[in-house]
Amino acid sequence: MRELSEAVFETIRAYVPESDILENEPMCRHTTFRIGGEAECFVRISSETQLEKLIPYFNQVEVPYFILGNGSNLLVSDDGYHGVILQLGNCFNKIEVQENIMKVQAGALLSQVSKCALENGLTGLEFASGIPGTMGGGVVMNAGAYGGEMKQVVQSVTVLDNKGEIFQLDNATMEFGYRTSIIKNRHFTVLQVTLQLASGNKEEIQQKMEELAARRRAKQPLEFPCAGSTFKRPEGYFAGKLIMDAGLRGYFVGGAKVSEKHCGFVINTGKATATDVADVIKEVQERVKDKFGVSLEREIIYLGRF
Ligand SMILES: Cc1cc2nc3c(=O)[nH]c(=O)nc-3n(C[C@H](O)[C@H](O)[C@H](O)COP(=O)(O)OP(=O)(O)OC[C@H]3O[C@@H](n4cnc5c(N)ncnc54)[C@H](O)[C@@H]3O)c2cc1C
Image (tube, rainbow, N blue to C red):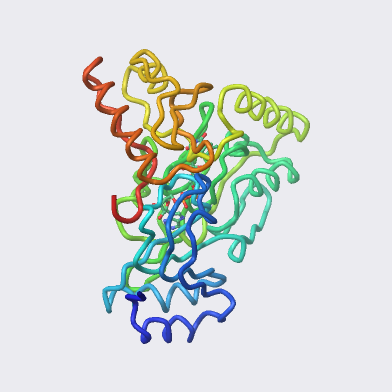
């Protein structure tokens, strides 16, 4: 049964075309895990104005909402999400380039942004070319790989707060840390990101991207749905090695399994539920803690009831 009131749907319809409002939308269609129950309301955002109107309204009437990028760091409950999902994706993905500065809307995929940097002979974003998230999600998580991270290339971030105010945060105020930023702890929405890159040699940029893609293919279970590294890297250790040494390589519950190719990844072998994945994660955390005394902190985000 629908829990969001008709008034909420009417308000959304006042700002968003009917075709971009989906009711009871399966979230398995919007996560790289290919897992997740239904979202009561799923809205494809195409303008800042929509967010400026809807976010203060949801806060005022206490409607739960969640900002979704590409769902590549997310595990959505089998029960789904009782609230509104605001997806900042391919309707909100403009990229502008002026010399070595790129202005990127939050929904642009990092693969598109990196490709655009390459086409313009700009270096600095090679590390991000294989990360399957959006610009917004990348900044929230301070996504990084192979020695690069968002912190190194972000000049400023345009955000919207709960009250619908838009303002800019510069790099120093973003509180970037390992897979975190100020946005993770405050309820801000990333609208646009300004990147500062350097001019470089196109062939060298392309070569670097290809080399990193090959390293990913060799080490990561990209042939299965997943959400990237399941755990953060514990200081002084590698999560994958701890998990392997705890004898958990290939450990599974239902359709969720510790990847045999890289034990730091929990994969969906086909029909995994969110509960299967959460059970694998819990068991891995307990066994690694028992055996090595190390606490593995989750990198992936849980949405809904677990
Ligand atoms: C195969 C694979 C490989 C991966 N490799 C890497 C890697 O090398 N390095 C790495 O760091 N990560 C990696 N990841 C994880 C993931 O791609 C990153 O964390 C990415 O930055 C998440 O972006 P997203 O758009 O998918 O965010 P989502 O998963 O949609 O959301 C993640 C969080 O960001 C918030 N969010 C998203 N957009 C916005 C916005 N516009 N405003 C405010 N909040 C927002 C969400 O509310 C949520 O809290 C990998 C994932 C996969 C599946």
